[in-house]
Length: 202
Image 1: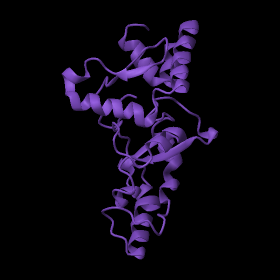
Image 2: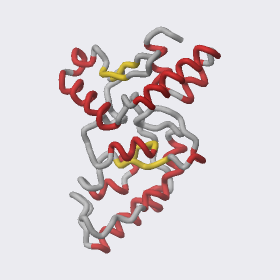
Image 3: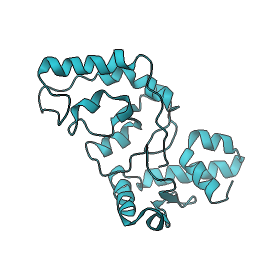
């Protein structure tokens, strides 16, 4: 997981997502701030911007920092501030994080993870041979113990240390070692690329 820069809102977002969403909330008598009611289920106007979100973030999952093809059907829109916390944020571009389905399901409605947009740089470090992830050893000195605690919660909540993700990251680095193609590593596995560069292994 590495920092992500907020990308500009698409020109048609207000027309396709925000205004229909706010109008629907008003028609239902639901305030546009505060928690979403259990019923009715929110209208998913944000789905109209799913492809634009994938395009804006170049197909890179905000949480796993890996590229995935749009055609896989694995793309989803994560609402960083959960809809259950602030219903109006359901229709705000700045609250959307491009996410693989698995990471989105793991995050769910919880807020105890780093926001990729605004998180400190080098919050995590990788063992590139095993793919294992942990809070960066200098994180406490740079940002205090609370940042380390949040990093640990992020790993746990998103299951960033699962055997499958560890194996994937290790495989990406071993593929780089065979072909020495840093550009492809950067495009397909930005977190592994970042760590390999930071550790002087590129």
